[in-house]
Image 1 (cartoon, rainbow, N blue to C red):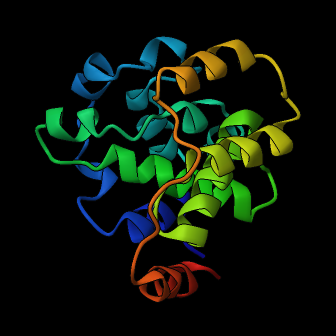
Image 2 (cartoon, one colour):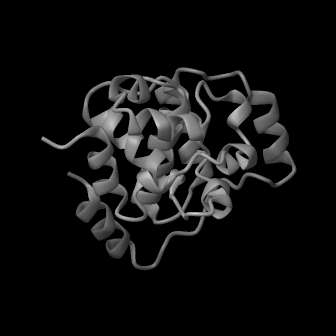
Length: 174
């Protein structure tokens, strides 16, 4: 049976996490490290130590913005952003779910919008997110203001070759 470290290395298919020598440049550059339960460097260390349950149950993997600042700063090209994606997938697959439920709901609404039209349809994505999260009115004032200023359109263009987009989703869904 593979160790937690081996599982992650197999999924990221790039520079193995053993290449991390904990210089903390990833953490120093991370724009959301201040809000994380464990900084990116510590998550790598926890994986190396086999702390699967602690990592998959942490809010850190859900707070990562996938901006890839960590990857660009890493002297060994360890893909921490991809690692965080893999950890989120593992948490969902293992029925642990998301510590940060609203982030998961947003992720699902975003992907649903892409899958249905090939692009982001902001109004439909917002409706989908609001229905999933149950947070109907907290930002209604800001939303109306954005709509009045033309920042949110009622419709969005559709992708001409929507079947190609759907084929990508069917290849990646399990």
